[in-house]
Length: 304
Image (tube, rainbow, N blue to C red; front, side):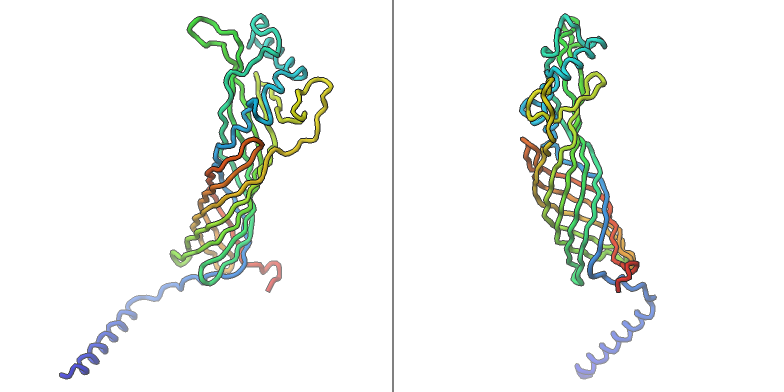
């Protein structure tokens, strides 16, 4: 048999086998069509902020807001001293006036896990690449505790009643503006993987800085232009003690496509960015976990 005839026969046999195999496999659902074009989205999640700037709220003497400015003022110091005496926290014989109250240990502050919400727009292309622009707001709370000396210790080898434990806290709003280039890769007929690489611009706005002594709260936010809030010293309009920072981020999202509606995505973002508070500027790692709701059907706006 000639070689040409053998090759022809083999091709015919392979073709018949392939045809038989195609008939045996039931047709499955067609892959979802990749959406291209503009979408709007809303997102919400949790944020773990880096603690590098948290000590801004600790009330240390070098900070913008200090414990001693309030503790040793005629306006508030006398109230604090009288409260501690009346509740048996200090003895007038040991500490005869508020000027003798001393901070013996300042707080090491940390940010609590908090929430982050936002919205934005994105544009997808047939290649799977795209871009997004996102605006987020996070409200962060910093917590800690410091010790006041009561000089009222009992016993030679014990610290019992020697210190008064006091809480201190701060609150800030952090606004993030993110721009990213993204790539989506289909995983199944309805799911995909999205990777984002982007730039971050952030702005911190200090809202509160409060200490709690023996159950009473006192604001240490400086509204006295660095002066002690004594009688005759008026307050001034508070000027924000935060600033603008910048950085980069990377995100990974698993998305579920809803044809003709949009998508729901769950994901993680890691920021490496600079945050700025008065006297505290640091590059840090910030982490978010969140959910994003995307909409690409604008029919209810009568857009055609």
